[in-house]
Length: 287
Image 1 (cartoon, rainbow, N blue to C red):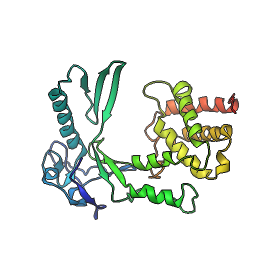
Image 2 (tube, rainbow, N blue to C red):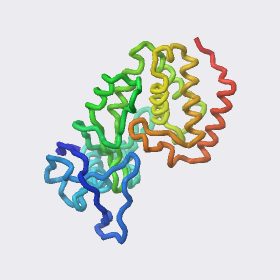
Image 3 (cartoon, helix red, strand yellow):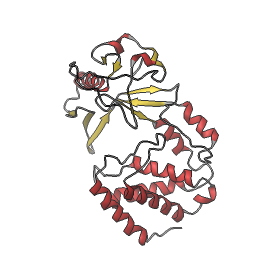
Image 4 (cartoon, rainbow, N blue to C red):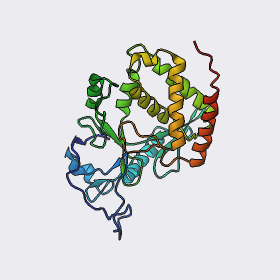
């Protein structure tokens, strides 16, 4: 999504009584929580006319559900214009745009999400890093914050914060000291996919595992902590088991957000039991 520039945090809070259908609600909309926020055109020094139009804007707010409606129509038009209707299909889902693409290897399902990039600021919700932390280095922190963040249109009224570029930088610089963090993370992800959480919609995703990795790297910041693969890998498994057992995994940047808040309790409990059995007898053959 282009044209918006000069982002700044909202200066004042206000109640919202509007609905997506244009009617006025008797009670205000729920305030955003955790990784969510409102987004108003007045938060940008530059906001072209299309962002003020009623197809995406209500009472000064750029509304993600309306943006998704416009985006879905653009995708439908693109599929038709490019004569791809026999190979690309849009699935019915009002909160996201999902498409199924027919390839030579079979069907591939994709989720397309409109995003507003904020490259000039760091979200005030992301109180990161904590004081006196040795990982990542101050130079890496400065680099990460220079990339800013993004806002994703994947709910009705609230935009979701995303720190994809920041997370990519952390992953790229994992083993600059010669450690085995990446190898441990890859092994953890492979065990999750093949043994602990197989299937297309697992209760624990690669993003959860990535967050576990970042927290563990912060707790064990020294190169000596990541010289032996077996020790590093089991640290990650123990951290994962603790988070799953407590049904609590803090987002690495927005630490008031619990990434497991809406996960299935039954599935988390079953996974916790599986991880507990594994930790009793890991049976790892490691160099």
